[in-house]
Image 1 (cartoon, rainbow, N blue to C red):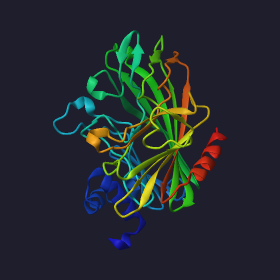
Image 2 (image 1 turned 30 degrees about the vertical axis):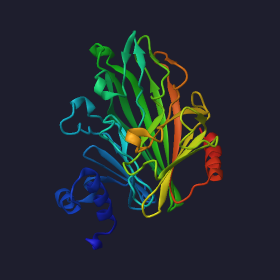
Image 3 (image 1 turned 60 degrees about the vertical axis):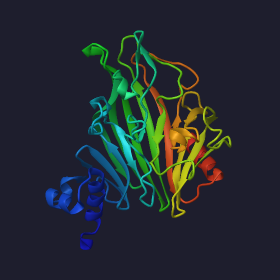
Length: 344
């Protein structure tokens, strides 16, 4: 197997995601060309599109998986909890899984994602976040514009917010084009992801995003190993895990230290053109989930104020994630934000 080199490593990564033995997967699929598109031979970034997953690799290592196929609800749970259109797994540069989906305490949590929570449509309450309410969901529609350059790979995923209480012609309440762009920083300890959401409502009268601590923006449910004993938070305003919730920031570092004393994490950056920037945040309290202190982070642009979404008008939210291994200082975070703030 070792002699197979790069193709086998990439297939192994996909096999892990799909829950397959890599050897069986190789035997089943035959040639790597059947599952992989190498759109720029000069790039260290490649992707595999297979069985509802779009896996991005950097230097033969998996870094991000976008799930466009449905992930079914856990066994014994309502089918309302099935979902598509989210990032999971998200890996650290050394291969640790950073994200989590369908945790027993919040089955509707899906890695890195951003559905809207308290909305009003024609006077009705519609929740696209808490799937168990049966009011709505978010589903993947189609992939567009997969592009590669020497230092980046990007694609656009069209996602639809579906209103289960609407008549068929009005069921699609929000149309979102989510652009994900992975950057090779030519640094073994860091890589970067742009998360750019453009959305509009086809509804005649639009809809209302009601002020609430959850909803939209970009949310992150950390892996089960992240607790109040090993995870930390630092915001651009100097807030920590105890004080960050409900405050506003330009950037926020969430990190964890493993049992092997290896540190990894994500620097979340909010673009200055985003609504309510510096943006309000939701950070779970240190005693969350029976005092385990599990980690949840979100930039929530509607935390403090309602947002009226007019019919057929385009809106945009831009975020950046710097995924790192080791230390990332507040001075470096500020430099990343300054560069991001000048981008369009």
